[in-house]
Length: 141
Image (cartoon, rainbow, N blue to C red; front, side, top):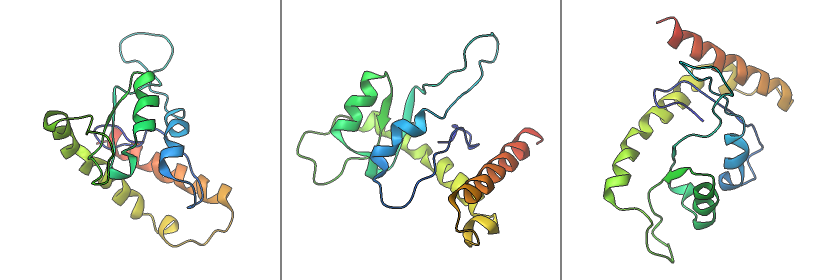
């Protein structure tokens, strides 16, 4: 999960086999954003999630709607139900390039692209270090 400006907010690392739809809620659980102008519990729930076509599922939309989160994703061509969003909401999908840019930033770290490590904990540590470097670059700009 990344912020609207690009820095990573939360991360969950899994093997390649599970569907991304199953991992969304666990990944949302890793987000902790401090409140700017007041003290209190950090925010854990975004207002909206902008995702690709792989996240277009009625079950996922229902679960996240129950939590008060809007899912903005293009519709699959094989949908059985009518699309839940019109073009006005999907205009926000244009901002997805910021997520892809963050993936490109992570791809600049050679250690993450070329897998030297076979241990998932070591790989996760390097992903955390890469995310930390990305956030520090944004803060120090």
